[in-house]
Length: 255
Image 1 (cartoon, rainbow, N blue to C red):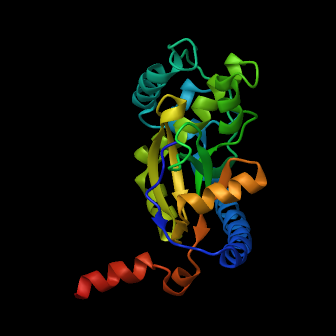
Image 2 (image 1 turned 90 degrees about the vertical axis):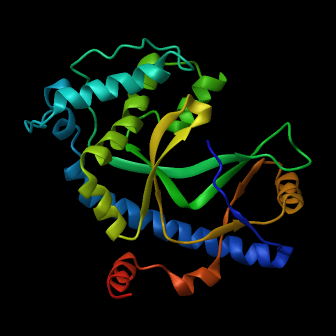
C-alpha cells in the first residue's frame, strides 16, 4: 500500500513504551467510535441504492442512474481484474448479493528503512482505516492469495474487489455522505493500493497527528520483536489542538 508522508521525531526507549501504550488505547477507542458511526450509517450505503437491478438484493430500492454506475464499476474492475488477480475482466449483471454491513481495517503501508532496502517493515496507522463492505475476504486475505500464502479463490477475490471498490463510487455519487463523515471529524479520501493492482479504496482518517521515530530505532524494535511490523505513534501534544471543521469554516466567513 502507498506510504503516507509521516513526520519523524527522535525518541528514547522509555518515551516509546509510554507512547505506544497510549496509542493502543486511543486506537481502540477511535476504532470502536468509527464502527459505531458506520453501524448507524449503513442504511445509507445499501448497494441496491447505487446499483439498482444490476445487483441481487432483498431490498427493493432502485437507484437512479444505476446503468451509468454499473458502467463505471465495470470499467474500473476491468482495469485490475486480469492483472494481478488473473480474473475475467468482464462483470456480468446482476451481481450476487452483497452485505450492507460496513467494516474497516487499519491502513498499512511498507516502509523501507535505510539499512534494509530489500525488506519492508509493515507500518500500521492507528488513526486511518480502509472502508469496505464486510466479507470473508478482507485485504489481508486478498494479499495472501496474491503472495501464494493461500490458494487463490477466484470468487472470493472477485467479491473482495467489489466490496472495496463500490464504497468509492458510493461517495462519488453521494457527496453528502462524505460531507457527513467529515462533519464527524473524519478525513475521507480515495487511495490506490499499488500492491493490489492500483485497487481504489476509501480511507477514513481521524484528525490526530502521528509520527515515526528514526529508521535505526524502528529497525532496533523490529529486530528485537522478530516481526517486521511497526505502528505509527500518536502525537499526544496534538490532542490539545484537535481541529474542528465547523469552527474553522465559520471563522473563515468572518476573516
